[in-house]
Structure formats: structure tokens, C-alpha cells
Image (cartoon, rainbow, N blue to C red; front, side):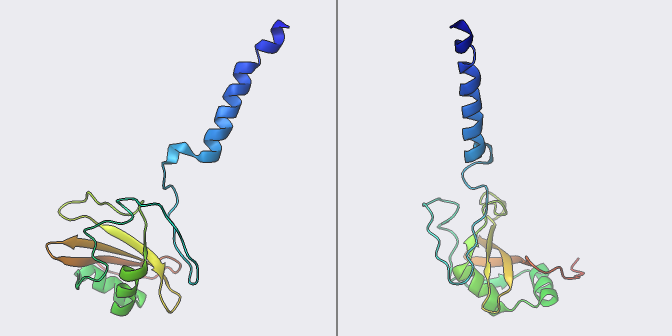
Length: 145
């Protein structure tokens, strides 16, 4: 009878490890960025980083020299940048709402032309700066120093 009881702690530990692996607790609540493909609908719980009040989705944009260079190199238009600002999903792993001097938000999505883009925006002082533009599916040779 006594030998049966010594396996209970091991079974409980195994169950706990299995549950932890299934839930992936060590990665936090948003371990994978959510990006919608055209025609899909995503429902997310409210999260201050996913819906920052200081990121105006219809703001007037200004572009850094770096962003303009990346846009030119990667064939990304101002219309596509605006499109991602208005409809893109925030990638919390690539965003930093505590960045200084201004928070940065990496928004991802697909343009009307099907380009999978990540655009980094920095709302600051009444304007929103486009910091950089990335094509997530195609590697471009750029020299933007």
C-alpha cells in the first residue's frame, strides 16, 4: 500500500508541467503577434498596449529620412503606410509604449496589393512620425544609413 502513495507527488508534478507547457505561461499573455489576413476577423480582449489612446489611427503623418529611404527601397507607398496605420494590428513584441522621447508602435498588416508590412509609428507632440517600414515577406537590399 505504501508504494502507491510515493507516486502521487510525481504525477501531480507531471500534470503541472503538462499544463504549464500547454498554456506557455512563461511567455506571458501575448506571446504571438496576431496579424489578420485579408477577409478574416479577429476578436481580442481589451489591452492598453493593443489599443493605445495616444496612437491616433487617422493622424497626419510625418516621415523620418530613414522611413522615406526604406519606403523607396521596398516599394511602399504613403497610401500603404496610411492603410496599415488605419487597419493594422499592433505587434506588442515589436512595440515599446515606454520608449523615449516618444512611444513606438509596430503595426502589421497586408496592403491592398498583398504586401505583408510592419510600419513603426511614434506619436509625439501632436504628430505621428513614421519611423521605419518593413516588408515581412521579401528581403530588399537597402542602403539607408
